[in-house]
Image 1 (cartoon, rainbow, N blue to C red):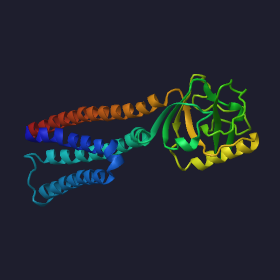
Image 2 (cartoon, helix red, strand yellow):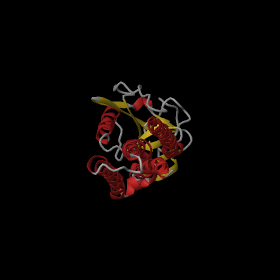
Image 3 (cartoon, rainbow, N blue to C red):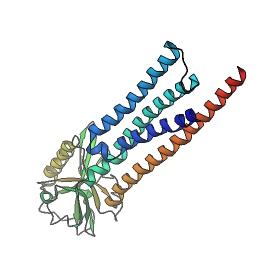
Length: 283
């Protein structure tokens, strides 16, 4: 029973530890610790490989009383480490890193896009505007550079397309390839068609920021408006729920992977027991 239990829980334990380290806040705040855990897991697998080579091919002795168990432990541990690394990186990049990036910034509620200034909200990660805030699609613009970087100012107080000019436009809804790049009237990014949407999630991709800034500069020239400290936002109904969904998705993926790994490892062990039993009876 000892080799069976080791072959069941050791690879699954490796998978769980590496997956957790690469998925959550340790990856965000202590990358050296994540690297150390990953290195330890890889080193363990390498030691299993060396042990298997030594016992089977050099000294021709058995491991765990059956040579097949040592090879099985090595192969499933290797698979567990590779799979946990890949799934953990995917989970971190797609779910948890966007959540941590926004969570470390501030959340502002009931912001008036008419009177508020972007300079005062440069630390914002999520903004919920006052009731009646909307996009001024009539002053939207797109800048083409391979993709089309689309922007539309956020305003309040009048119907879309009939907005009076503001002294300063500092809050802009953005999107890629969701406008034709022409002057005004064509902006269908994210929740732009929903009149109940009045929230924004901050753009955190620094590589894209200059292109959206160029789109705003084009809008300034085309519509004779000012945007001294533009804040770029993905327009949506509720940015708080959006970011919370990132965390929920990340944790759901983690637990699904952990349970799936245990089921898969149990199945592999069952097949190994069946196969080794057949070999024993045959001999």
